[in-house]
Image (tube, rainbow, N blue to C red):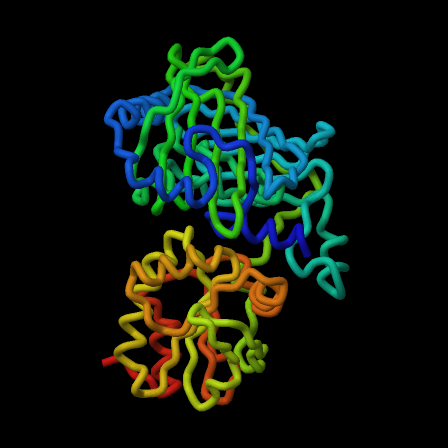
Length: 429
């Protein structure tokens, strides 16, 4: 249960916990709040960040090795090492290793296609640990590969199955090299310079990049010699503090890399395999929505079955999820428009500290009912019973308490939500 909760926190993009020694303002919540009042955006930090990104983006080749360590409220994960080789215009190779040096997966981009395979057997996905799914997993564990389109600028290494299933989440997406922007960039609020430190033999400028009311912070140790990072830190503040730290080594810029490094052909007898889609694990239409009774942000109890006779839009969200930040105001508008017709919007955040969630809801003037609870019962309800292992996860529940539709993500023009609401008697004007 503990490991599943951590995995969930990472998958949903902006994630959970760890009380690490916190330099330059990474202290208690009260210290953070007081320091945020005086923190100002610094042009020099912006210039250093821009120079780092442009150095990566305009390089002809780039290779490095990164040792990645995560700490979740003092609980350290086993370190992971990944190796990256990239070459313009659109070639890449990535290999991951566990703490014992065992290969966890290989990703190769040959210019048009991304190939993923696992020399020591593929990882298992949620639900493959029991029943018929487990039997199928055993049959497809070895000698399988994935094949995906990887056109220039259209494939993200940072979101690859190889990295995710190696519990390896790079702070800086390697695909910046191919021109892909970090998904968090639109949410940057300020940057500042912290210090000058040595990482190995490299003299580095240290900068902090803050996102979304400092719910998340990046720190980069940027080499003055080649403008590339040598150390990176990701601090996520939810119901605790989760810290990821990387140390780069064997960094080479614009060195010759033979194109053969990026070629791969499936061996004879190997089969192409497709992983289950995230939506596949969500509850299916027609089954009864699991009931729960948990405290709302205003202190009263919310019991799902008490809403029988209404249509319920149940959304699992979190403060650090960019799509959730767009969806909450949208749902508030929908709630105000249709609550007189029997629509209940119910928010559920089981990842963030309650005060953080309440501050966010207040900031966006959200008045619809919300649960913000990180108790074991709440986590079990969201993560296990509703399979909310990403965010936002949405369910439409009919007036009899049965699932009518389920989907992942936020799109105000999504036909699933509009057509289902119409069928349930909440027609769009």
